[in-house]
Image 1: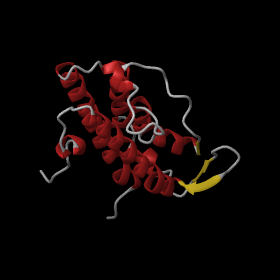
Image 2: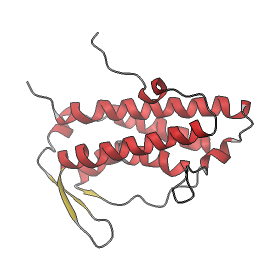
Image 3: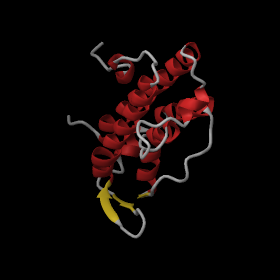
Length: 173
């Protein structure tokens, strides 16, 4: 039996979203100890030309449960304006994303394999199959933004390790 589209995506999405929740939890715990106001983290950037922490966290959601929902709709667009939320709001959004991911039904996602998905950034139109979109676009973007959020907190002095980034790995029981 081969690996299904669900197996190749949703468990990893859940792992990364839950790990990002843990990373933000550590930021909330250690930020005040480091003299950092969590709201300063929300707007922090690794470099002036990069988008802020809040965009990175919202993009983790966009490229996990958002990607699944776009696959179901057959269309993916650039993210809307990043919501103006505080640190606790970002934590709540991640928690909601994890719950929604856990509710994705294997049969419904697997049934999308081979279907077309259109990505329309501006005047361009890129056509994908659902599986190519999820595997070659959303998963790399998910990890880019999760890593960037991790790196911003690490840069601020939050004591994070690779284990925090990885989250709960799936091992044979």
